[in-house]
Amino acid sequence: QVQLVQSGGGLVQAGGSLRLSCAASGDTFRSHAMGWFRQAPGKDREFVAAIDWSGTDTFYALSVKGRFTVSRDNAKNTVDLQMDNLKPEDTAVYYCAAYQDGSYTTPRIAWGQGTRVTVSS
Image 1 (cartoon, rainbow, N blue to C red):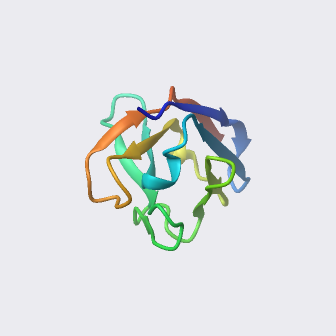
Image 2 (image 1 turned 135 degrees about the vertical axis):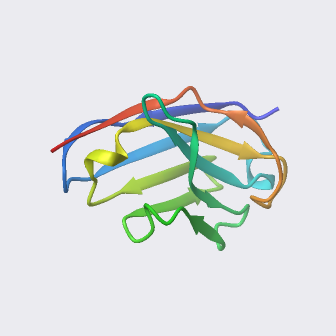
């Protein structure tokens, strides 16, 4: 089963940018759609963005559309989340996830360890 290790995150002022990265182990990475989720204090985990196995089909939550960009490099087994024009309400722990197959409509089968993003006003 694919294993995910995240990097990036940190503290940034409102309007700033951060980039999260998620590295996957194994040689099946390109067969999985990938996603990003987040969980703010006291709230449920919510969907942020997803990308299909090829990188040609992406989907975003309305709250981040136009500000966040998800991308992947199947040669490096990585998926990134570029976050621009960050807002205080983006503060959360962010998780990457692998889907069962190449479509992000399938169940999630693996999670990264989470990385904290804090946006100050």
